[in-house]
Image 1 (cartoon, helix red, strand yellow):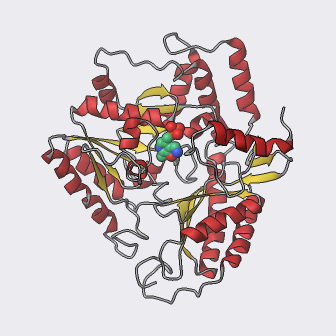
Image 2 (cartoon, rainbow, N blue to C red):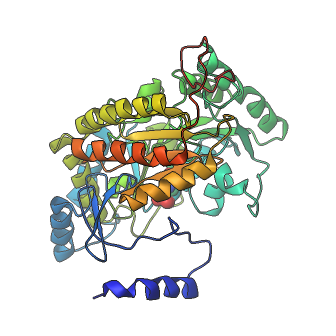
Length: 452
Ligand code: PMP
């Protein structure tokens, strides 16, 4: 239904009829027409390694997802106003992965919607309006989701900061105020929440809650120091607020050792938000919360989403989670993540322009720096585009867009990992070999502690 030569026409059609802020990745855009596991194929059938997209969690075009979707579409597809075993089966599966106090599921259509709903629940439960959230976060594309997404509202042309939102510095112990060589950094980052709470109270908004990506992704693939979230949650709860964990990017086994990011932090959220990977490409979002919070929201007004929790969505969602278990994908994330991390650490040691590598499982970041230690945004852009020439798709993140983001489907295998490492080494050698950073007394070479 298409010809390879159509690419330019498609690009032009897009320019003619789509908004200019619908962005395209790469200087030379890629057209992708087929997928299989963690591989994608362009209009000429050329393969690309998908080392970026977390939506095809169990792999592109998974036969079990195809089968379950086709089967349900042949039968019927309806909404939550009627009973169907797929609804409770999906809820049971989701809840089996979560701590016992989280007992109630809401099914919606996207991560954005789930975060919107989280705001409504937090406000219904607390009677307060104010939200504390880390800087550079992203929670979605609607009015309220943008209002809690500094990544969007704080950009030139953004809507600016709402007075019911207080930002705290993101707990980045590479570049932030407190570095890895400071044993008290988790507590120090957490303490930044105190003035935010006080400001919301002074403005009369009170504290409805705290929302954060468990490991901030658009902020730069950051792994907050252990103990950060429990300390923040304690402060938020003491101020009457609820704690929301946005696990859209970190959840469902991606981290290898942990099914959810909050487990790593030893934190117990009141609301967990799931999105993208849970439908493996079918648009879905899920919010999970406690009975008490769900009761506060059950105030006489019906909650309904036409497509949220549809029979089709419930069948697909359950199938995705079953596949993660049946194919041992969480373990695979652990093994492949460790292999990637080992190779990246060697690359970090060999190339001065790599300031830091960090991550867990298949959620990884490579921070590129200029010779003076500042954010290597241009280098990052170059590397991302050159990796595309090697037919490896990776992303970039961070306030200065200088952190390479590696976040493949969980099906990735050793040869793919080795290819990423080989290509990255090759591309970095083109960047110009900056002199390695001088030795310092601290534990971490290139720790960003100011002396490296
Ligand atoms: N939260 C996080 C952490 C996300 O990364 C995203 C999407 N990138 C969203 C929420 C919004 O999800 P969606 O685009 O499905 O609405």
